[in-house]
Each structure stands twice: as C-alpha cells, then as structure tokens.
Image 1 (cartoon, rainbow, N blue to C red):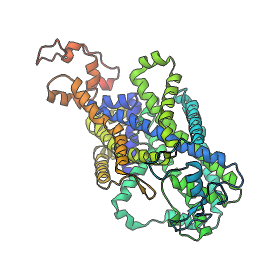
Image 2: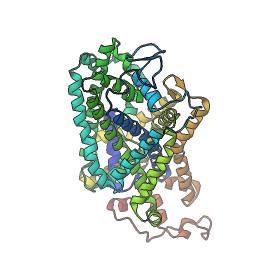
Image 3: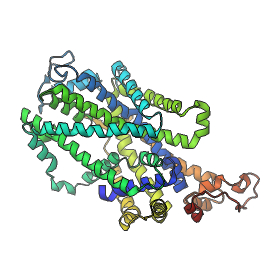
Image 4: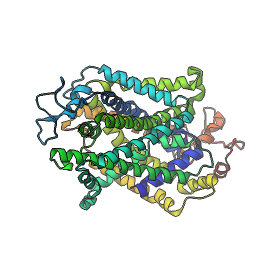
Length: 528
C-alpha cells in the first residue's frame, strides 16, 4: 500500500502544492473547478480533527504531570478512585479491571456510563487543554518559518527517546516474545480484504494524504525544490519510524506478558487504550519507572504537537489565501488571526474534556478519520489525475525540476491509485461498522450525530460542484465542459461582468474577450 498508494499520492500532493503556491482550496479550484469542494472539505476535516486531536495532547500532559509522583499513581490499587474489582495484574476476567485502566477511567476521565450521560466539565483537563492550545499557538503564530524551527526539536527528539526505550525494553525478560508476536506474520490474514483496507488507512493517516496539510506546507517550498527526494525521504523515514515504535511497544508488551503469564495477543489493544492503559502498566513495573514514564509522555507530547501544527496550518493558509485583505482589515495582524482560530478550536474541544468526553472523542474520530478521509482521497485523485491530467502534472514537474514523472508514477496516478481507492471506499461502505468504545455501542441518535460530523466535511464536495456550475456561463453542457477544465474559474474572474453572461448580456450570446490577462506561468499560458 505504501508503494502503490502512499508514495505516488504523496508525490502528487507535494508536486501540486509546490507548483500552485496555494493552499488546498485554491489549488483544487484551479485543478478541477467542478471538484473545488474537495479542497474546502480537506480544510473542514483538518479543522474538525484539530478540535478533538488536541485532547490526545491534553491526556499526554496529564500523564506527564502525574509521572513525577512516586510510586506512579497507576501502579497499585491503594488509591481513592480504585474500585473493589481493581487488580494490579491484567486478567481475562470481565469483572476485574487493572490499576492503569482505573486511573484512566476513574481518575483522569471520571468517565460516565455512556454518551447519554453528559456529566460535568473536568476542570483539570480543561486547564490542560488550554495549556495545550497555548503551546500550539506559541509554536505556529509566526508562520511556517517558526513552525519549521520548532519541528526540528519536536520531530527529532522522539527518536532519542524511542531508541533509549528500546535499549531498556530489549533487556527485560519476555521482550523477545513480544517482538516475535510483532514481526512474525500470519500469512492467511492476507486473504482478508479488511487487512488491506486497514493497511491503506494506516498509510493515509500516517503520511497525511487527503488532509490538505501536504498541499499547504509544500506551497511554501522554493519553486525548483526536488520533490521526488522529499517524497522518498518522508515515505521511508515515516515507515521506519512506525516499525521502530512497534519494536518499542511490543517489547514492553512481551515483558508484561512474562510478568502476568498471559499471551501477548490478549494484551494488545487498539485505540487510546494501548498508549494510556497498557503501556503505562508496563512502566510501573520497570526499574526507574518515573524516568521512563516522563520520557514516554514527553515524546507523545512532541509527536502530538507536530500533527496539530499541520492541521491548524491548513486552516490558516487556506483562509489567508482566500480572504487575506478582509482578515487583515479585521484582525490587523496575522498573529491575532491565528489566535482567533486557536481560541475557536479550544472552545469546540470543551465537550471532549467533560466526563462524557471519551465518547465524544471516539465518535468524532470514527466518523472523521475513517469515514470522511477515503471519500476525500477518492475525489482528490479524480480531480488531479483525471481532470487536471497526468501529462499536465508531469509538465509541471519538468518545469520545476527539469525531469518528468517516470512511467511507474504515471501508471499509479492514472490507473492504480484511483482503482484501489475506489475498491477501498466501496469496501469501507459495505463493511462499515458503527462507532463503539470497548464493549459500549453508541445508540442510533449518537450514530446520527456522527454522520452529521462526517457530512461536515463531505458536504462541501457537492456544494462546491453546484456553485461552480452556477457561476460558469453558457448552457448546462457548456458549463459542465468548462467545469472540468483547469483554471476555468480563474479565466472567468478576469472577464468583465457582461462577458460572463451577466444580466445585460443578450440571451444565447457568449462573448470571449481577446485581452484576458494571462497568468505569468508559461505552462498555464500554453494550456490557455
């Protein structure tokens, strides 16, 4: 999936962003006016995600502050929040719960029994969420140059911690069993389509395809930057990091399996549980537990901030592209506009730090990260690879770097990627499972809210198409032909009102101006 989907689509997004010099909204409106809504949808999805994703950073900060206690508060069951069913060891029993499970559920979240029961705001978490947003703001308010400097630390320091954790974990008894469970494949699972869908979803989420952040960030590159080198570097380092993190996690799970006499497969869970329940439990039994806990949660904070920067930057770049004059008039400075976005996102994130917060988080994550992203990716690929065209994309590459895309990339863009994403999208819809949290299944009304959240991003695709067909001149078929022609909206905006078929134009007459101001790029002039 990395080779046939991840790398080609990463290359495609970086090329387009660097050539267009615009965020996702403008870039996709130029590429295929009919599908300009894809750009707006990617900004919407980035904004929805940044409101709830910062809660992950909030939890990491909460655990980081708690890690300075001795003993670690999730080590044993002698605390005020523990229940009579608490145990210090993982068990198969559904009646007992571990000390780390109870710390997460009853101490940090003070979780309610379901989404129907709202509870109250967790003031500790609310203040930490505010701190998380202040950290994000301080790192990005000066624009991509300051973000770039911060990322040197937040992206590189986690490697130091990962390697230190791996060296420590590898020496623990049982670590080999955990690593064996991680790296030995079960080949018969390759027959399951779900495995392939999950592999594609992992690549999309890990690299960030379809979120708009790659288009936004690459639009700041120098025009002649080597895109292929960036693509290969990102793809390889990204996947190697995932594998390194896997070794770190599973060596610790192997150690827990040894301590508790349970197979690793019974300990491995997905979702927030792995990082905030299973792994802290492994620390509690290590020598110098506080040191490893502080290092691990500081690393999570760094990684979370990196992802958050990108999502907020998409919003900032896109709105500044579209409404620069108006925004500067209202806010006077870009820094104050960034502050306003962070403030709104903070307010929208408050439901996630209430006692019902974990359910809100799970619902938003399920319908945003799983449902919406595949729709977006499919229409983005159709817009860029089919409407804009592989030949035009290769021309753009040649103009920037002197080299065209090779045959492998052209086949992936034209046939393999659209086909694979269509199959994955269809399978995701057929096999769709309603959101759940552990054994708790969300009621139908909550699932309905989830679909409203998903539609908050997807709806922009049809709305954008309707708007484009509305503003273009001519009969319906003429509008349809124009709407899939790159730069059609740009040409339109440069025509006088009556030539666009305005109110004073005679019915059925469409005047084409001979003195349209052409963009200053030779490639665009050739196309026009």
